[in-house]
Image (cartoon, rainbow over all chains, first blue to last red):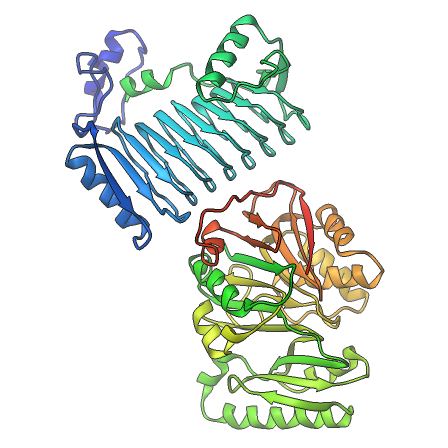
Length: 280
Length: 311
């Protein structure tokens, strides 16, 4: 795929090395409306609303129905009676609204790029894995590996989350209203994790980069995770972000502890997720 | 992978056979090889329920001689019971190879179990005042139908759907495990115990017996030994997190308790629902939804978390 050396990203000076061996055909151009929409994205109308009753459907059927509604131009979809089924609402690469009335099982909302998803219940393990962009808000608790390998967007859990939150996170923001379990931010490479409650052991273990903010107690820090001074910029960002999702504590954000990488291990590349799209 | 589930009612007996079947059937994708139940009915005065088998299910494929052998083994067990002065109050044969006996017995349970297991193919699945342990190959619905579990009433129970990784696909390696020879203790486990052989050899040197090569059996024997030493269930669960290596989440039951422990990495899933009248736990929330289809608020226990609930 040597042709990519002439791509927009090269012309922008984002990299100089030849990008050989890549075969992903999808390209993004800055001229395209919105900058980074997929050429195969559906043209949906946010004012067209539809509902799916999942009670008698299996996950494949539910996901197929969501796609059919997207194809027919529906930009707002209500998912009823999801029954904690696994792997729902995955691979949505459109801007649209999805409202889930109930709870999701494991691997919900994986591989998203663009949609806004609101879930009234709880979610199981590996929610929001590999999300590129968009917003997901969970009103109750979440399981482990919440936001694993998150690349962009906002992933919000208003309750508590399990262990390994934001493991391998590569961008975006994870916001937790309650507590988080052990090994949160493990091998985190970029982005932010905000925990209003307490954090379990080995927080930020082996993190390359990124920032973790904790409002409560931290059981202990992992390898190469160190505390840093909370700056005015941090406070302003925390206030804005937490207020946006109605998670701003009454006492403000001054009590938050900031955790960053000590960078005694090794460093990752410095491309933002949107820049990565251009490279690809 | 394996799936585990537990259920305990704090206000009396319910149809837990039907509910455990529904929970385990919802977890069948986590383990298609075998399904097992350990459930607690009404305890009898000086009575025990003994579940045992005299052959493996797959033995039936071995020709015609096995059927005669099974008849001879059952007769041999009957002779043992008569010799030890066991009064058999009721006997059922849900399958050709697995039996349920309600017995009156005042002697030593270990002695009774040892004598029955001396019969070729004989293996005690459980002996308990209230405990009944049923396990066989297949999914929860088929095991439940074969053993008529839908009518079972009790206060609490645990169950397991097994994906065989460490040992054979047979009843011997299926969960739950009874904590031989201790009354009313059973365990189910999802995970892998990495110091299994080290701990097993220690326990065997102390005279404990193992029937399988499944690492989960270790948890049953280990817990029983701790309880025998006078520990509470909660103390034993805490100690197990320090002494047992690997990744695990396990559930353990006694005559009136259901306990849970999670390893230091929290690597194996567990979803917990607590209400005033009941507690339900499972590897996945879909199992809890199988008996509580309305919206519920559940949590994931954290690493090193130990919980014990009373019936």
